[in-house]
Length: 567
Figure 1 (cartoon, rainbow, N blue to C red):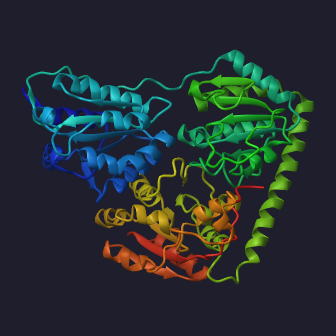
Figure 2: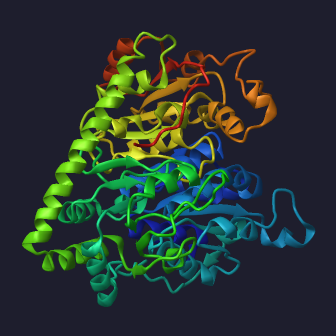
Figure 3: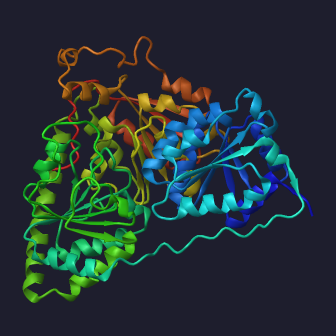
C-alpha cells in the first residue's frame, strides 16, 4: 500500500505518542496542514508568528517532559524562530523543529523562500538534517527523536522539501521510535572518592541547577542535603531556569549572585562545593576580578554530559552519570560512612543554617514592609502581593528579571520544585508563550506568567493563541515602561551617559503601551492594577478563572533596583 512522505512522518509521531503540533504554516508546509484536516490523532496549535509557536512548544515540553513538535515556514519562518530555538538549546529542551523546504526540482534556480537551513540551525541544535530521499525519512525521524530525548537533551531540526512530503512510496522500512534508557550509573570509584571528600569538608555547599528538576532528581537532592547538613543554593539568575530545591526548606540558601566578583565573595567561606544539574558557570557580563570560583575551593561536579565536567573550572572529582542516579548513589555512599560524631556535626550544622536562613527571610519581609506605601509599587511590593496568594501547586513562568528578582523563592512562597520556569537563554518573547505551553501540559495546575512589559511585546501575539484555545493562564505584566535591565547593565558598566541617568532607546514611552486594550484586541480579558491589595485580589480571581486574564501592573520606574539573588 502506497503512502506519502507526510503521512509516514505523522504515523511515526502518533505511534510515539505525540498528539499535538505547534505551527504557523506557509506554502511549503501545506501538505502537513492538509493531512491534519482528516487526522484526529493530532491537535494543531496555531501561533500568529514563530516566536509564540516555538516558545509554546518549549513550555509544553519542559512541563510535560515529552517531545514537542514544531512546524515553521521555510527560511523566513525559521529565521523568526531562531531566538526561541536558542533558548531551547540553552535549556536542553527536547523539541523536534521542522520546516518545509522548497521543491527539490527548483533547487538549482535558487527559488524564492528556499535556502540553506541545516547550516543555520546546526549551532543551536543537537542534530540538523535535510531529508532528500523518501527512503531516508523514517530513519531521519527515528534518529531526530532519539537524539532530542537522550541526555543531554535538546532540540533537533529536520528540513522537509514540499515535494518529498507529497511523494508516494510503495513500501518503506519503518520501525517504531525507541529511546535508550538514560539512567546511567556513575563510576563507583568517583562516588566513593566524592563521599570521602564531602565527609572531610568543614563547610561544604551544594550549588544546584535546572537539570535536577528536568531529570526528576529533586527528592534525591533533598536527601543528600539533609544527610550532609549542607545548604543548597541555586545557580546564578542568568541561567536559573528551574527550581532544584524547595524554597521553603530550612536548608535552602537562596541563589548565587549574577557577577563573578560577587559569586567569588559568596563562595569564599566554603572549602568544598558540590555542583549538580548546571553548567559551572555561564556568566552574562564580564566583571573583574573574573575568577568566580575561589582557587582554594575543592569541587565535586555531577553531570550527565562529560563535556561539562571541568569545562570552565578545574574539578577535583567529576562524576559522569544520570543526575538522579548519581545523587542517590552518592547519598547512599555518604550514609554508609556516617559515624555518630559526624551525625552530631550534621545536626549542629543544619540547625545553624536553618536559623540563618530564617533570619534572612525575616529581613526581606521587613524590607518589603518598609516599601508598602510607595506608589507606583516597588518590585518587592509587587512580588509580595503575588506571593501571598499563590496556591501550593502553582507554576510560575517569569521573564521580568528586575521585578521578580527571585523574591518568590526568597520568601519561601514557591512550595513545589517543579513549578518554576525562568530564562536560560534570554531571547525575549519567551515567557508569555512558555506560560501558555506549560498550561497546555498541566491543565489541572494554575499557571501564572510574570512578564516584563518589554519582554511581553516580543511575543504578544501569543495572547491570541491563549484566547483561541481557551488556555487559562494568569498573565501579570510588570509595567515600568522601560528596558530596566539594560539601564542597570549600563550603569554597572560605568558608561558615562548612564552614570548621568541618560539613556537612548530604553524607554517605552511616547506613546506608552496600553496593555489592557492590546490584550482585549487579541481576545483576552485585561485589567490595570495600581494597588497591592488589588493585585492580590485580581490575581486570585484570575487563578480561579477558566479563561486567560491579563493584569497590567504599574511598577515603579526608579532605577534604584538592585538585582539580589540571595544572602
